[in-house]
Image (cartoon, rainbow, N blue to C red):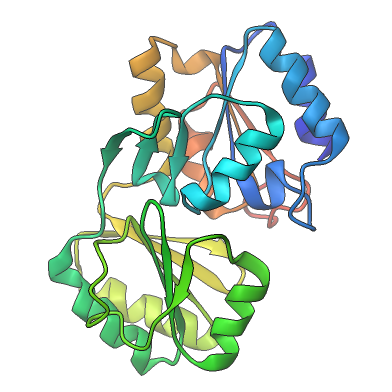
Length: 251
């Protein structure tokens, strides 16, 4: 967290927009905003820097953090699939296409993985009991529901589908899905987790779109993150900061 705090303060005269991941970046290992980070965010905001949150998660996980920090800013959600205005409007949303969902679900079940469908305002979980309980313990948020069958639950299209489970099975499932050559984006976001988005959907692309809406050059954008799903932001931002808890290849 010290890297986030120090960079917020050191770069406040150089950058107009900061995008930050949530888990493992803006939040500590207990899922909380520390007083030092909250103070740095307030000082950066007072200095004219806009902070937007760009997690893999959705609005129910983001809004409590925005409220705690006193921020009235948009946020990027579900790995870059949507951009939400603080007044509730969705400025854009690019969900996983319906035509590919049965195939993704079939692969998930074949390899015994946990599966999460992340809509803007709700999260649906399916999978082996142990893995569903793991997700509920570590990454649950308001609006999370467990369903028996994603395909018959009558839910909408997810901005992101999340896979998690035993690493060998997870990696084999990823190889299988990649071998189908479907127009999807797959990126690792936990040691034992992968995100699936529509083709081309990334946090970096969403960050570029928002900066363009604001008329802010990417050279004056800073990005903070801790995993592979943040690399797309690092690639386009003028300043990229990987947290100390990031995997070595991300750093």
